[in-house]
Image (tube, rainbow, N blue to C red; front, side, top):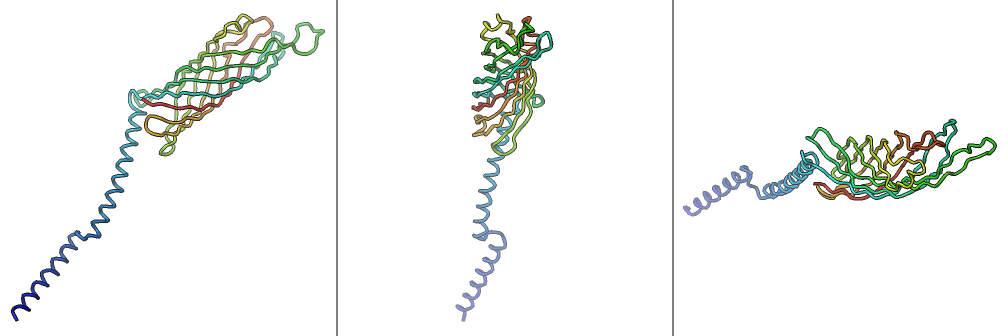
Length: 247
């Protein structure tokens, strides 16, 4: 009889302890789910840390990146003679390359500069000065090699976890490398405006692939310095790809 009472008491104690264990949140199944939730929380925390690290790099006081560009562009020209006759032009192409520095200053102003190599090739023709002659006389096929220094404001940012889109625009200073063209009347300095749209795919916080397009309007200072051409301007459009490296 005593044995049965002892067994009954033990069963009651074990049952009560089991219920208390479950109510206290120590159910093995609940513990497994808690472990799974912890893994998800850890992933979210690591992702958040990575994004904060990326923002710290791109928006810090000394945040900077360099876009190494290589592409192809076409150039056309427009102008007039002293008699207000149009100057004809044929479009030519040439490769473009650049190392463009993007700076973030105190998280309030983003600035772009660097070195931009551009071949501005085009054919140029002017009307005959003799009124008895009809048509255009092609002066020369110009192949101009320029080093440009852009002075641009930069706008844009991340549009998804790995993709950013940026626009920079402003004036540029262009310097003619093959100055033999200057002897024929073409100026060796070009003041113009430019705009660039660049898409970036970030492999990590420091390296991204880039794809973009740019447009340059040159000759705000009038590119020609000769009696048979009064004004001359150029329009260059190009597309490029490359890699961007952050620091």
